[in-house]
Amino acid sequence: PTPRLLGPAEIRDLAEVLDVTPTKKLGQNFVHDGNTVRRIVQAAGVQPGETVLEIGPGLGSLTLGLLEAGASVIAVEIDRRLAEQLPHTVRLMQPGRSLTVVHDDALRVTELPGDPVRLVANLPYNVSVPVLLHLLEHFPSLRAGIVMVQAEVGHRLAADPGSKVYGAPSVKAAWYGRWRLAGQVSRMVFWPVPNVDSVLVGFERDEEPGTEAERRATFALVDAAFQQRRKMLRQSLSSVLGGSSASAAAALERAGVDPQSRGEQLRVDDFLAIARASETARA
Ligand code: SAM
Image 1 (tube, rainbow, N blue to C red):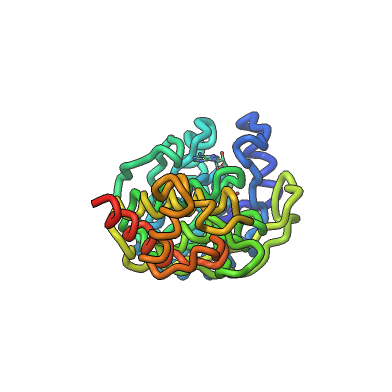
Image 2: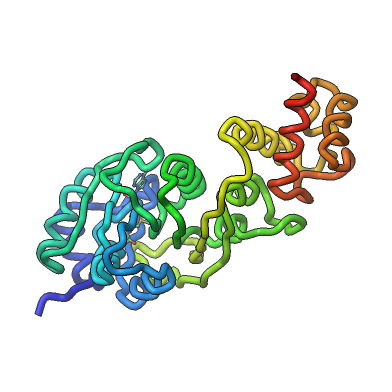
């Protein structure tokens, strides 16, 4: 019988037929272990009939797992050969399933053929955070998701203030909802074997705490604060808050934030309060 998921033999054959040599630039590490695929699909809580967005389907390892669970999959793949092959692989291994492939750069898509409620992806590592933030900004239908990312990035996304790895990605991700680590993944399940470990990260979307203009202002503050993360906020934010450390301190005090604190101690709500306080100053 035809297998329903891709194992090492199928991955090797497909890559050979397509003449695909995985590139680091596109973060091409393909999963060749069905147990890992089923574990991700289960952790994601995919429901039959649901529309799921997958970024970077590659040769189709995770796509087939999502389809097996009964999801309708919209898959965005930047590599033309992979995007063109995917419908054929699915027709062969799981005929009758619902798949739409979009050949595009996930950092640039602003429209999709449907309204996916869940994101499930093994993200290309070098762009995983920008891709996540772009998708959350442009596709409000996405309510939850599970993504596989480089371990270091996963820990950042799920970090709380005060943690060593808490940084700009942690604060920006928190704008959109709650994030949690959902397990480790061995590097041995990939071909080629990457030189970093991976983790699963889950998120659940909450209502955004402010408007789009406030989000932009907040993210600008976050970038400034973490570009000089050792400095006190009255210094690191001086250029974005009136041009001097005195004007910055005044805005911080209006926001109820200690001007001597550092970005790594603040929650996203604190950054938003600063953005609002600086707006008041300008008005
Ligand atoms: N989902 C497959 C799996 O688990 O075996 C492949 C995952 S691989 C880590 C990342 C995939 O993302 C590759 O197929 C790569 O071509 C694709 N990719 C890389 N950059 C992309 C981008 N900006 N937009 C869409 N896809 C991208």
